[in-house]
Each structure stands twice: as structure tokens, then as C-alpha cells.
Image 1 (cartoon, rainbow, N blue to C red):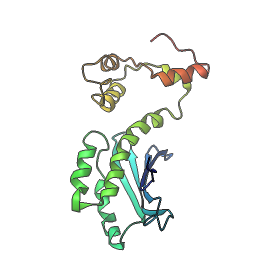
Image 2: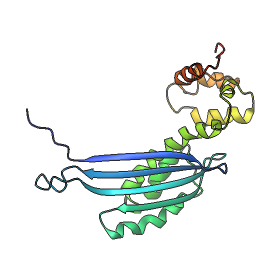
Image 3: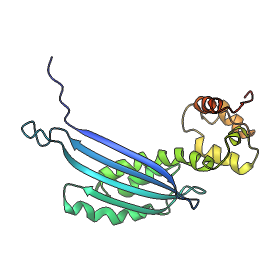
Image 4: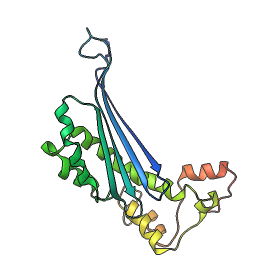
Length: 202
């Protein structure tokens, strides 16, 4: 059996932060690495792309309010000339339609294909992180509170509806949210139980 040799590695690192002022920072980093370098005769790892993007997001509207980006490793110095164009992200919603807008703004010769791929990966991170931002400073017991607040219900519907088969528009989960109920994810129920929080029947 022939020996399997690693020839390329791509990694995406994404992380979200509470900025402390009500806003959320979503940070993404992409690296491409050649484990064998130029060839087997080289044999030393060679990073060919290393770039990052920071998006500052207003969680109330999911609008991007500031952008920072950098190319630490790129093929050509001219690659960096496209960096200022990504300020066009300011004002863009990071929810529905985000991926389509990224392709429209920066697809093909209008941008860097690697930064485009990184931005695509960062959209879902912002949505997932918004849950943590809302709950970060709340007591554990608040996770058990069903809400009949129309704005809260609308937010939950907006973020989840038709995002997957569980959250399909005419599905059970959506109907529960519409009437102010919320079914805890299995991992959340397990964690709350481990922390000593009594969970009522859902």
C-alpha cells in the first residue's frame, strides 16, 4: 500500500468577543500550509497564506459597524491593495443574505478568494456567538425563563427560522417559540443539571 503524504493544510480559526460596550467582535484567521514545503526535497513546512479579519458587530441589528483586516503572509505585495475595499462590509447585515452579499461584493476579481472564504465562515460564528452575548452576564436560572416579549420572540424566530430542518417554518420548534416557549438544547439541560439547577418539565 502506498504511503499517504500530507500535501496541504488549511485552517480556519474563528472567535467572538464581548467588547464590553454592548458590541461584539468576531475575529477570523485563515492559514494555508504546505507540510512538505516546495516539494519532498524541501521537506519543511511552508505557510503560503496567513490572514485575518475582525468584524465589529452591533448585536441589536446584526450590522457590521467596523472592519479591520490584515495579510501577514500572501503570495505578492500587490495582494494587499485589496484590503481597503473590505470597508464595504460596514453597514452590511451578518444574518440572512450575508453569504450572497459577500460573493456579490468580493467574488472573482473584486476581492481575495481566501478572505472571501474566511468571511463566509465567520457569518455563522456571529449568529452562534450572539446567544452567548445575550446570556453572558445573566444568572443560570434565567435560562429557564420562557419569554412572551414580542421583541424577544421575533429575535429568536429571525435567527432560527428555516436555518435547518429542526427550525423549519411549520415545525414544532417554531410553533413553541411563537407561543413564548423555548425547548432547551440537550447540552444546555445537561449542563444546568450538572450545575444544580432544577429544570421543570418542558
